[in-house]
Length: 148
Image (tube, rainbow, N blue to C red):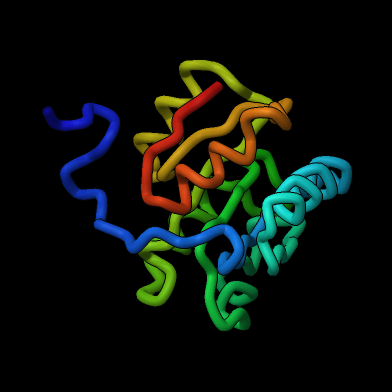
C-alpha cells in the first residue's frame, strides 16, 4: 500500500548512517542550535555545521564536502526558511538534500505550508529529546517525518 505521506515525486535517497552524516542547522537562536547539536553528537553525528540565517545558506553549503540533512528554522533574519529552501532546491548539487522545517510555529497550517513549499519533513519546537534521535534516524533513512 502506498504511503500517503510520500509524494510520488520524492526522489529515492540512499540511507545515511548517523555516524557518517553531515548535518547543517540553520537556526538563529543559539540555545536551539546547542540543543540540536548536542543531541546529534550524542547520536554519533560527526559533523554538525551552523548557519544563523537563510541568507547565503547555499553558498555556505557549497563549502562542505557533503551534506546529508538540513534542519531549517522557518523564522530567520535576512532570509526566511522558505526562501532559503527555494534556493537549495534550485541548486543542482543540493536539490535532493533532505531539508526539514524546524519551527516553534508548530500547527497544522504551518505543517501544510511547509509540505506545499517542498520541505521533506517538519519538526515542531520545543523539540522532544526522547523522540529527536529516532526522528533524525528516520529522516536519514529517507523516511518522512511530519510531527508537530
